[in-house]
Structures are given as structure tokens and as C-alpha cells.
Image 1: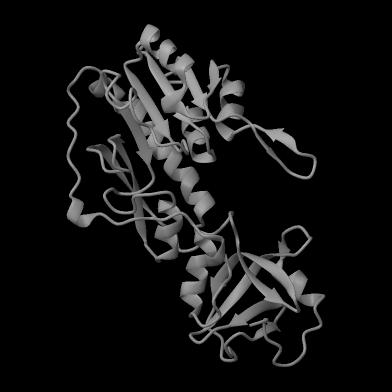
Image 2: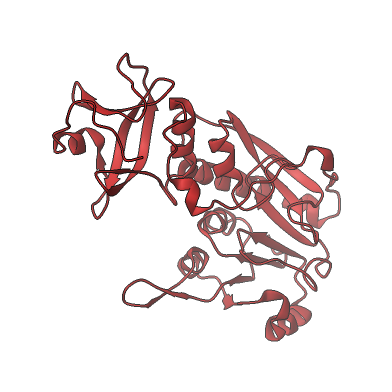
Length: 310
């Protein structure tokens, strides 16, 4: 398709969407954040979207403040893209972008809007124990995630599925929904439906303080928190004064499940809660790589009735 489409994106969800979209509907330009400096060596780290764009051979520009980037705005005025895809960008997009392109700015958002507007829709859905979510394609407006909806697709959530796996599925589903229907947007036959503000909920950004598991919660709630926080930032507990990330769990009713008690049975490792037991499947002890929880448990030499740190 030879439509003039630009792509604004930064994170991993956007990069996966770009990989799916580019072969069918190649963007004329990809705009992403400049490299960041991170790590002990203070090395420049490019965004996931930049990595994807380079692999795909797509024209690329950096923009630290897209609404004030004079060079990019001049390029836009000369090129006049018909549509801008804005996905997982990390910057609030204003004018001239919102009303400049003929078809506006379209976002692929991993929730069934107006539910779970905001930065962490997949994580919050999992943390809330939802069994279904979805993907929404909508036109950007000034208010966050509040624009009229163009298309939606539903996605069931598996009982053991985590945020990383669900985001991957939803990126593919959203990208395909776009490529299969973009012609209707470009030719003016697409119908966009206003959102019902009365049904809107907010999916706030995950705070680091939420990653520490509250041992007063039941096994199912803890399992949902672990799924929602995996792979990042990763739920954790502290044991013998050291942090242990909990990456994969399973609800496993057990007769000996005192709250906060960590115990082994049959080569498996369990955490007791006020409501059942949580089997620990994959953990990452501080300073080590992820490992099978049963193997970690074998090296602990657990004492009777030993508990996690409060």
C-alpha cells in the first residue's frame, strides 16, 4: 500500500507492532526517542523501535519533544503524511499532529477502551484477575486514550499467562487489525465511535512499591500480581535479608500453608498464604540468573516453619 504513513513509537509493544505492520503497510518515516545513557558503562541504549526500524531498513528520526521539533514539523509540512500511527511512544502528542494529517493519529492500545486507559493496561488487567481483555484502535485526541474508537478485538487471558506473553499476542492482533482495515480509514469509509466516559477506568503506571508481594494476600491474588509484573518490574519477596524475584507461580492448595511460610514438598517449593498455597516455579535470587524454584529450594536447607521476611 502506497499511502503516506508515519510511525511514532518507542517501547517494545510499539516495536512488535512495527514488525507486523511494515511488510504490509510500510511507513515512510519512523520517529522515536533518542538513545538513553544507562548501565555501569554509561553506554547509549537505543529504543526497541529504533532497533526494529533499522532491521527493517526504515527511515528513522529521533525526537525528544515531538511537539516542539521544528525540523520534524517542517518535514511534515513538506511531506504531508495522510496518517500517523502513534504507539507506545512515551510522549504526549499534541499539535500539529492531532489535526494535521488527513486521517489523524491512530493509536493501538492493549485494552478494550474505555476500560484501562493509561500506561499499564495489560499489567493492571492481569493484576485484577481479568479473564478477557482486548485491543483498541482509536483516533488520538487531547485527553489520554479518550478518542473515538475505530476497531476493537477481544483476547482471552490464559490462567498462567503473564504480561510479556499477553502483550506479544496483543501487538500482533492489533497490528493485523490495522493492516487488514487501513484502506477504509484512508478512503473515508471507516466509522469511529465515541467512547462512553461513564465506563472509563484508569490503568496507572506501575509504581516500584507495588512489586513487593504482600504476604497477607491469598494465593490467587498473589499469582495474578506475579503475572502482571512479569517480566518487568518483576514481583519480589525478601528472604534471609535478600531480595528474590518471583517470576512464575501456580496456585496449589496445600494442607500445610501457614501465611508467609516457605516450605518444600516433593522437590517443589511453596509459599503459604492466608488462602491456600502458591507454588513457586521460577525465581531469581538477588545477584543470580532466573532458575527453577525447586533447584533454589534445594540449596536453602530450610528450617522448620521458616518464613519470608516481613
